[in-house]
Length: 107
Length: 123
Image (cartoon, rainbow over all chains, first blue to last red; front, side, top):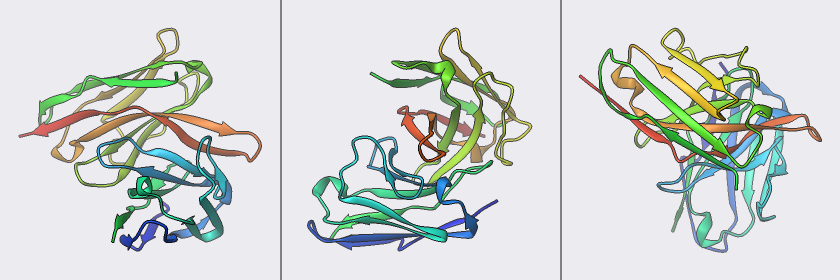
């Protein structure tokens, strides 16, 4: 099973700041298989990024994904109030796994 | 509007059974692989199982293999999860999820999620 480790566990930032979230895999992952989701409190997750760097339908361009191999990054260029949430990375393999999540909270 | 609506959750005793259903609307259900994903209270997301379009390929997470069975009825636009021999650690919110394949990139992702149905296993 491929393990995904997200860091930091919690990111405390102010609106307008840049957020950089990391996702590290226990072994190399195809970029096609790396996905990012956002989950707000009490809501279902929402797809943000697929194939490591492709924004899903309706996702603002302040969200971007990058990386390859074992290291992937989700960047939010300027945090809006609605971006404070928990973010999960996922590897979509034969047995999909998720990271443990990074909480982006208001500082 | 594309929607997934889960039902069938509830309180069950250890060792008991429960059958979850997920009704799809607003899209061609038979054209998509489907998944169940669960989330224990205050915890992260855990993939449970997947089913391909004709129901013939159904991988499971090791934690549920041999106890849970995923199935689908394309005529009824419905996904199921039969859960047997339930344990306390199966307590979670169970999400029904649509799989989307992006042919431009050769990627898959979970693009539509239901609101979930809560399963509580108590001794």
